[in-house]
Length: 150
Image (cartoon, rainbow, N blue to C red; front, side, top):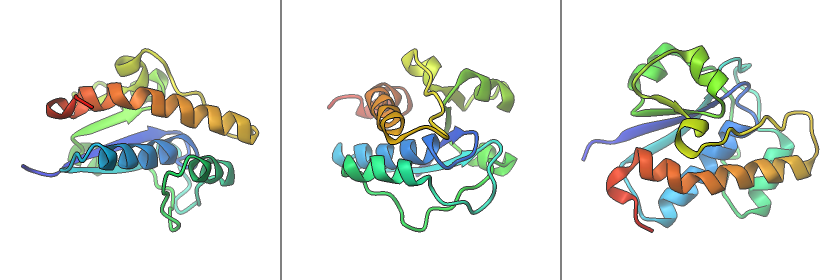
């Protein structure tokens, strides 16, 4: 089977999308689903920024590994063209990218958006990670159809 790339997208690529990337990698590994590469990017990312300290803390508390060398990056046309699926945190972000067949959102898949925790406290980051993780089974069912069973 050909390797497929999934990209999670938010605004700055330091909070939501890196948490979604790490959580999805962990969930795919737990389910023994292979053939997917998971990445993240931001629509307005400052290249090379680290993951938010609170995002890293929320992931650590949930025992979800996160790459220590994480560096934010801006979503490019090449990334869009090379992705099997692009999952945006909000409908507004999906609309900014445009009407491409491989672009969707948490709202389209799971019926809820993932609000931006930027500038808020650790409890908001924990809640954001919880919301992402609650949606992942639906994301996997939609994006990885042969593997929709637990």
